[in-house]
Length: 437
Image (tube, rainbow, N blue to C red):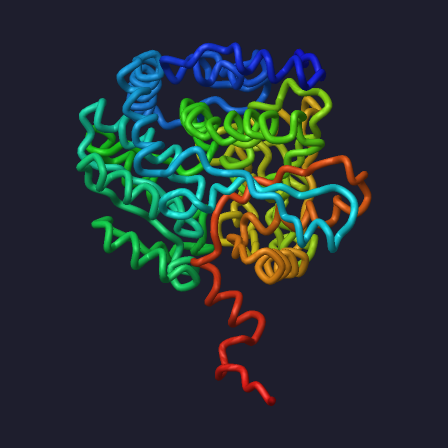
């Protein structure tokens, strides 16, 4: 991977001189580096590809061809950008965490506020793109999985915007845990399918949705929720999420005249992290840190650390790092965050770890809960539990770095969906506080 000149003033001038992109292809040229450009086989080095039953080879090729045409179409990109501006509210701002940074000492922490997007998370960035692609292809319905419900809400929203039906599959554990998002999806007109098979969480939701899609690919577009699955889905989701890092990089240079020392993001499947990292891949002085769910412990079934403990395997049509047994059966996984309890990771993350460009670490449930509380009480920002993994790592890092350094955290979603679960976990569901004066 080639690295850009680390002189920030030169970088800022180069960014300012860059012409306004006319197509998605032009806008995402930074993410189509040789190491992250999938060939016709969909491989990123030794990861990725499309491991599919024969009956799905044709539909996947159709999606790949339609997407390649769309990403070079100025009208498609103009409509996508219009919806990001007028509906999503982009660009999302940067927020310096002054009180938390003062309390920690050391590096200053800055958030990229994807939680302020319409629907409350980064997921809307790619679901709008998927909905527009489905409309372009003449599909009648979007189908997908969801874990925490953020992808499901975003996809139901996008479907309503462009006039498509929507079917969301969700593990029954997550249906109970994320009830407010289930209600939102149904209000938006989506059909929500509760999945009771095996682990009853995100992996099973993917399995269930993919089974239905495979039965009628002419009717549906599978609108996968992360940078996972068979080619071309990892590329499609990454390209639509690249707006996060591209905005953040330009905003950092404009505000601080320098790039961040590190960019930190949570990693389950890995869409928000890929979105945050891609614009910084060639900036050699910027550390990129992906934070996996350490769960309750490092014991099998108690976490979802696919990068740390996974092995090379195949999951949901892709070759990647998978938590699995000797027979190749995916392990049960756990995370306090429903959106991260997945036994694999996007193939581009596996490739970036192989190249040594991204560091992958883990934070456990206890640290995540603590980070959730500290950000909420000190800054008035309630994060999604997924995003709180990245906040927890920044809290751990900041005291050991100089005060002249800044850590950019991608706050991928807001915690409205998690407040009932957190309150129950912390024992805060009783009567109102009694104040003695």
